[in-house]
Image 1 (cartoon, one colour):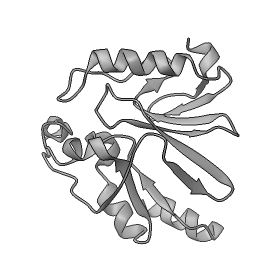
Image 2: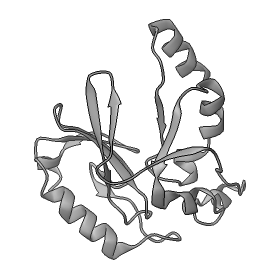
Image 3: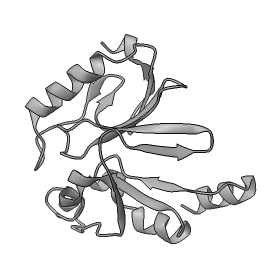
Length: 167
């Protein structure tokens, strides 16, 4: 967090949003520190994700020996909502399966999509945790497969890739 805080200060940038693509501990564990570092930023998550963030079993924090919840003042988004960052508009896309409120952020103009754990360059998010659903994941992946194949995904883990090389 300190490195990012220094980088943002040095570049004269402002953090507008802290986005949780979903509520698993490996994505939410440091959110409190980021909120402290960037107190004016809105903490974004999907409406359906609150139950994951606030449940020690659902957010799988118990797996690392530190069961906790992430109960903060969230700004909830839904499918189709838009987040504006500078000249860019990011469309919120809810792709449930890994968790109910898993979201991707799509910049249609730049053909870039931040995918969290919905889809990776070589796979997709697991569905065997509480609130995971393999049939919803299948439906989500089928929707993504129909998107512009020139979109480059940037997942929460691993390398980036164009959709045309995934499907």
